[in-house]
Image (tube, rainbow, N blue to C red; front, top):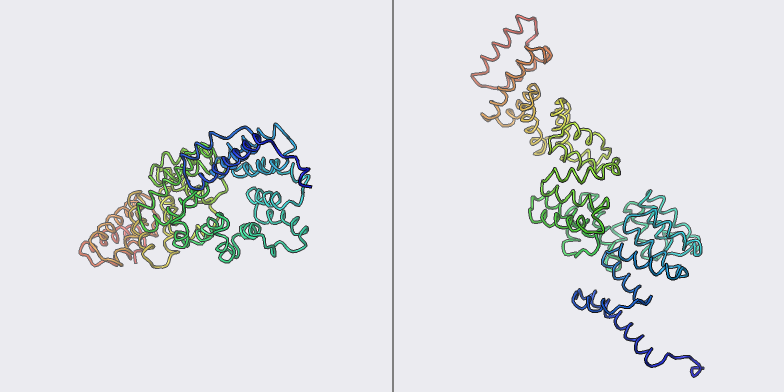
Length: 454
């Protein structure tokens, strides 16, 4: 009967209600982004487990994962029976990129509750970060067995979302949009899906009004703004991207992590301060040696600093077919090839492209860089094509200088004699009075030295 219930005294009940009210107002202030009131309610929190759990959850929501971990660990030291706290700590370590440690903490809970959806899902996420999507999906089979249905038929929005991520975004345009107002990660992952497909505008439309909360949010927004800013040469977007990266890279919780240092590198990259970029990239190079995107950025940084052999090595290590198709990659690699004495590879890169404004830009770069580096034969080939496309005096002057330079190298034995015929044929493509004099000199030398000229 109700009359037999033990009720707390009036004074204790008032204190209990005051603490509960303070915790509620503490979280309301956070939702309202009222930092003044948040500080007031923070100062009223006690050392009770309820208040400390409230504090830890607040730290977690604000992205202060190390601080949340510290609170949870203090509570665990006072009472090991709070087994579920191991899942909270594991989630914090996951957010801090300590995936192995997260799995260790998680296992303490899974030993007692092996089919816990929350714990199993977090374990799968750790495996995704450590290994791949297939390894992560395999961990979810426990839930499939306990539910009696294939995991792909689960109605749990978290599992639907994560399964889509584990499968490389398969079905992303169907799975993620309905979850955007349920899970913040859905919007971020839909942005990532579009970015992987170079659909920059679609990603931008999703994130342009999005206010980041967590470091991962700032990183994705920074990447989108940087891509759109560079594609449209929009300095304001590039500035906003730089600020997003700086926020993460300078945060105490992330400044010494791999993502944090990558962010600082990208911040300085956008500022074109490549000496600083190199410092940050070198600090994480040993962990990123097999990452194609890292090697792409590292190669551009090395090239921008004039470290051409190191740049060439970085570009050559890239395996991704998608990156190989990017014009930025083709152009930077061609430039590195020229500066390391492999101008023929740069010319082959040009020949592999269809006629377009980008191939014309590459041709201009090859002509000028080969000329400056003394690779006159390939400079001549490039200026010859440029002059035929646009018979301007500037291109003729470049072609004439390259021809004389290539002929001098031939006389010095640094160019194969067989190339003389090709030089002469390229000169004949130009209708300029100066051509005849140069041709007479070259033909006379060819005749005197038994080198075919026609």
